[in-house]
Image 1: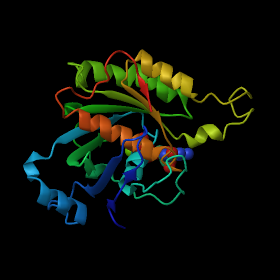
Image 2 (image 1 turned 90 degrees about the horizontal axis):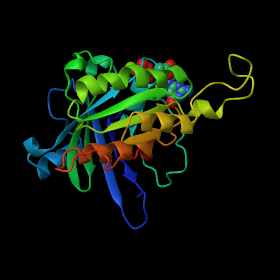
Image 3 (image 1 turned 135 degrees about the vertical axis):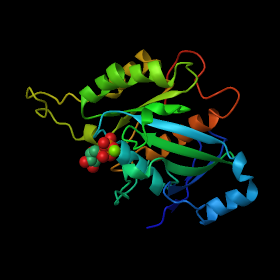
Length: 252
Ligand SMILES: Nc1nc2c(ncn2[C@@H]2O[C@H](COP(=O)(O)OP(=O)(O)O)[C@@H](O)[C@H]2O)c(=O)[nH]1
Ligand SMILES: [Mg+2]
């Protein structure tokens, strides 16, 4: 299996083009990977000058964090962002291999994103992330509650005391929502999953900068989320920082 993936995404707004290419390699590789993109980046730029962004995924276990990261390693090559990707098998990422490192090319310059998640074998509580992504499972409301009651508090008290790092609330397993039928719920009614309005409300209550949803299983909205994550992460390296101006939470 190749760890290389190239992504070309269409712009959000008319008239702007965004090229986003990414390559992933396991951090257990001690030598610089020699696939084409990274080689090109190394040639073009002094290695030491590539801005690094540490991104921490927080959330209950089983909400789908590893699967989401796994999806990102495959990348996409989508010319129609509204078209879901065909499901195909995802590479298995071992927690031991953290951080998961992605070399990204965005706005014609390279970045290195280092992803950690809660299951990080090195103690994640010692990290100083530049960007925090709070993850919940759209099919389980309690995991959204947990973002608010547990993970966000941890962010406030520990990771983001100076409030510099942007925070995204990310709903995973979006495919589950479409499968809900009357009678699926515990009480025989509709299943108590998380509807977008609820997710957004909680994001606003937590004063998150971004709210997004996707399904790593089907690939739905994954390219958009990757683009949003990449843009926000890249902005953390600028003087202005990655936080959204004002108090609004942007919906992807
Ligand atoms: N339906 C659905 N299941 C998913 C999705 N992503 C992950 N899962 C499943 O959810 C379970 C937990 O996923 P995992 O990525 O290990 O969660 P983590 O503990 O947060 O890293 C696994 O059985 C996955 O196959 C998704 O997008 N849709
Ligand atoms: Mg995991």
